[in-house]
Length: 497
Image (tube, rainbow, N blue to C red; front, top):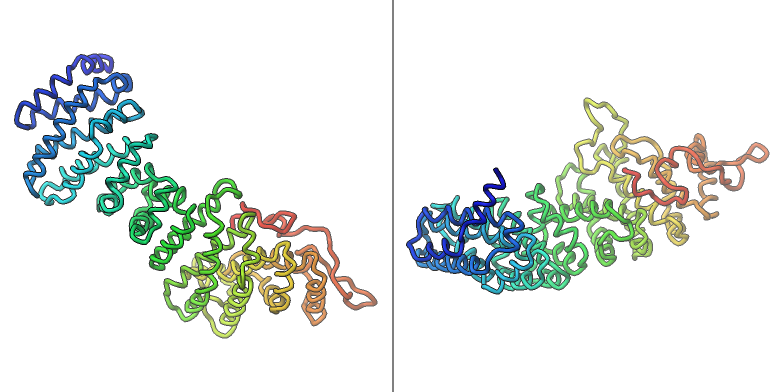
């Protein structure tokens, strides 16, 4: 049956049939011919050997339809919209995986004409909204297919739609049309065009893509644009971040965090300059998270939480970001915030207060709060910044942070895994640092109930003449931390916490 249908389509004289349409006034009777051409162009062999005259006559029909739309003003007949849609469908199918037809359609002027029609369709009244919308969808699909693997078409399309028409298409309420527009943008983008997007006058296009990531997460194209193109440009990320609301910033940071967790840790596609910028942002606004202690729903606080998550990921088994260990004042800011958060949790009952409520029915005391795990992640970041870095190890001691971290070796339902992160941090702070080891030994002599935390780290206290020794001795590694971290004290990216 399929073979008979193909034979029938192959037998149709489309140049002649299209020429007959041109000689008559447009009507619904012309739709079957255009629909048959669309079906024929679905067949790869027919596509590859289609006659140039077919596309020449199709171009003439589309040009005549354009004149009808322009002459009608804002109220276009349904049949004109239906025929326009049928032309766009035939064009769309004609250039699928066919470089020959892409070049032919470009040379015949289909790009300029189709984009002018799209621009007119966007300005039409909504009485025929369904027909208008279908024509717009098919027109966007056509320019998207035309651009695939064809740099000349990409550049021509970009010149005609960027930035205003592209933004208008991305802003369409119809999620399918917005998705197709995102596909066009993704197909056309390259390094030079990303630089254009980063310019202040064009940044609104990039911001709209990020808005689609947040409001229409089911669309793949906006996420691919952000992760495969936007995050590689530090200029674009900085300009976008500056123009975003706090909620939009959270979306961007979540995408960065997800990107860090995928693929090769040494080639995550994120610029080191972006990492440095985000570290500075965290330092500048980290105090906003303290408002959560009063029950405030501060959106800036949510941004701080997301920034911390990203910094934890960046300093976890990503060698290209380990320069953050030397980022000015990052460790100081993190330690200072941990001290403030810890003090707030001690002075009154709030989201930063340690809890022991593990009831599945009730949840932890702060289970509904975005601050859950925040303190644990502060400790995690401190541990990462101290890994193999003597200067930061010493700074933690000088800032009197070691006793604070050891005070968080207990289970806390508001901070899952905080004891493990504390163990990890102390391990990195003590590693090859005798002064820090002596400090911990002194803390134990002052009356710590037992040295179980130290033993979990792989250290043990020695007694001499019934008294604690002058230091701690390295024991064989073992315990809970082995399942979370590798034997160098650096996080495994697959730790999953």
